[in-house]
Image (tube, rainbow, N blue to C red; front, top):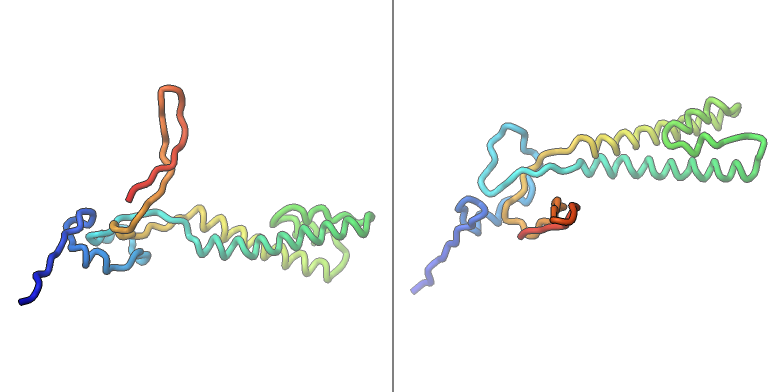
Length: 161
């Protein structure tokens, strides 16, 4: 005699059996606005992490190089000012216009292009979030929530699972 199969309905997925609810992908990021939302999923808005990382790394690395070059130059040669390199993204272009070295101009323009492109990617990744579908049965969810009491207001950290 075989044991009976017990199927429990998952309440957060609209009655989908737990075994089915747990078998789908965690995130559906190819979903487009206007398409029906599959049972067991909900929409969430997320920043574009790839753009943020892909922009922050080159921007940060080249900006640190600019800061190092400006610092070293000011320590070694007091006659020439390289203080424009302390400005992010636009500083290398300003410095390129002030230098009389063709090599210095080339590297300043290259530095400015990479910094500006990285900064544009970083801002774009933050400013244009993407809507994705996330499974309802995923575990713990943490979020900031407003709190109002009789003595004041503020933010609190809340969660659900």
